[in-house]
Length: 316
Ligand SMILES: Cc1cc2nc3c(=O)[nH]c(=O)nc-3n(C[C@H](O)[C@H](O)[C@H](O)COP(=O)(O)OP(=O)(O)OC[C@H]3O[C@@H](n4cnc5c(N)ncnc54)[C@H](O)[C@@H]3O)c2cc1C
Image (cartoon, rainbow, N blue to C red):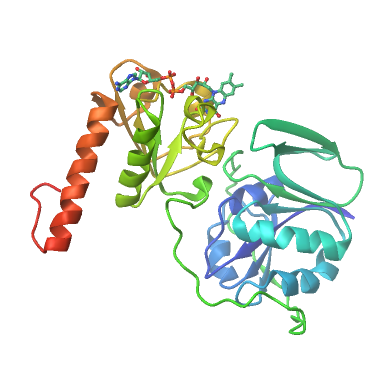
């Protein structure tokens, strides 16, 4: 029985969050299953060493699990990203293969897995003696690149059993920025103790929505109960990797910034020009966070108003 294989579900040629990390964790051995697997494989050129493509059309986790099981049964550990589709496929694969599932792993070793539990507050270690299925938290590990050139993919044909019931798909909606998993959010507005009240976080959420961004917060804020734990960014919260991070009144403690990934742009609003978050920022705005947020909300409100009136707002 060989050791590790990444199983990565693909939609319309797009790799899910954590797809490259799952592949790296499996030493470059990956099976891409879904719709547009060849295109998705291009994104793994410098990570994958052995690629199997299973082109089976739109997401159908029950049918996929049944069809893949005989082909992956010889792999001891099957590693899936803990993306929404990975989390749907993994338990089905575990059930068909009659193996345990370790969900939301932070660390994966030959003989043990460390998972996060209780809303990210507790790390639990599990001994893994035999075969298992594991989902990996996205964005928590690096991806080792190699320069051997892209591997030639192997195509695997499988038959899907139409008799296996699947949820009927009416429509795929674009993600709602206010509720989407923070680990997949491309733009995040984060708030910290420099914002003075719980109401400011309602305003932050509104401004974020207007800017097509998601809202995050520091642990100080989630501990106060102003924002739910699912929105906490950091080592004991969600690990994110946005293109843009806008921080309001956040000091930039290492437990927070360690969960930030590598944003292309960081903007920080803080009264202390020397705090770590300001030093990390591309644009450091020395200002009161509440007042800046209120000014931004007003500007966006005026833009909204102008849109509904059919007039323009200068500078908005
Ligand atoms: C084991 C452990 C795990 C942790 N895990 C996490 C985690 O996952 N995520 C996390 O975020 N933290 C975590 N922490 C907490 C972390 O160490 C920091 O305490 C926390 O990130 C600080 O949050 P903050 O920046 O909101 O608050 P503070 O550190 O208090 O910073 C507030 C900032 O606001 C600025 N400010 C104040 N007033 C204003 C104003 N009017 N306008 C503008 N700026 C202003 C201040 O200059 C300061 O920079 C963890 C700590 C421990 C010990």
